[in-house]
Amino acid sequence: MKKKEIKFKLAELFSGPGGLALGAIRSFAENENTIYGIEPVWANDYDADTCKTYARNIHNGNERSVVCAPVQEIDFEKVPKFDVLAFGFPCNDFSVVGEQKGFDGKFGPLYSHGVRAINTHNPKWFIAENVSGLQSANGGNAFKQILKDLGSAGKGYVLTPHLYKFEEYGVPQQRHRIVIIGIRKDLGLRFKVPAPTTKNNYLSAREAIENPRISDNAQNHELTKQSAGVVERLKHIPAGENAWYEGIPQHLRLNVKGARMSQIYKRLDPKKPAYTITGSGGGGTHVYHWSEHRALTNRERARLQSFPDNFVFEGSKESARKQIGMAVPPVGAQAVISAVLKTFAGIPYESVESKLTNGEANAREIASLFDGVEVGARVAL
Image (cartoon, rainbow, N blue to C red; front, top):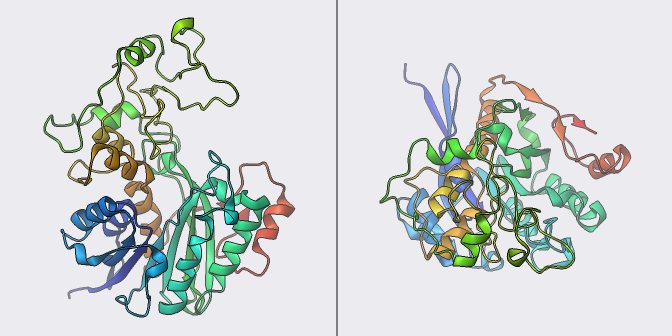
């Protein structure tokens, strides 16, 4: 007898190029009677190249499926209905690398449009993603408010937030992100954080970039022209080290006072996962090869983000670099979303306790985040 198919209709805000959606499409769960999967129906972003990338790779080139406009302009009463909402709301004001303005910044309050979408459509579940700095922005008050707003949105949701280290889930990159899964309370389900799959067997940068070899005619694989000075500096920087390496001759050292970013002219360690890929590229932040004296190509950066080579990024080289750095790694997204589908299918899987803190906050402070919020899995403090 043919099994029943249930495909959750996916809508996505702040979609980026489609890393989360690609992970969702690849996810499925199958029990004795039913196959659970994901079907993308529409998405939103405000950057034109990003919208074209998403439409090309997720919606087979149908640009009408992507609302390319500021999220503030979307009337959620008029968009196609959806069963699941994904939103990696802008992290600029929560990142520990920036000023961490939180709600006081331009981007911090944008998560509220996810709440607005949930209030309108009451999806069965949602997935929200942000940087690890979210938990400490505005003295921790921003995260607390976001959890309260998401938990009470629509018909009410049971939340399972967790600080995922994506290198522990098959991504060849040290990328740590808070992911919040919310399942509608009336469904009576409890999501558990899936256990890491590669915690003791990380995928290295060399493995990701060299196996298999990238075709010479692969798209988004253009080399960046390096100045003679940059090449000379890189010759003195060993794998895994950066611009502040003590072996760099004095005349090649950077004249920088104050804070020194660790990613400036930092070369990859071929035996370890890459350091975090970002959307920037100027000032020596392109990400540099461990032995060749050059920055990585966008195709190589995309591999470190776990994108397949047939996923094409639209726009200029600089635009593609930004899109890749801002994306959710599809392999990481798939690990989380597959577990959600197993939850709906009633399929048991290995799980771990939710973790939200890097140890800097005490248990009382973390526990206070959940005042008035129903949590789906026990949180390790």
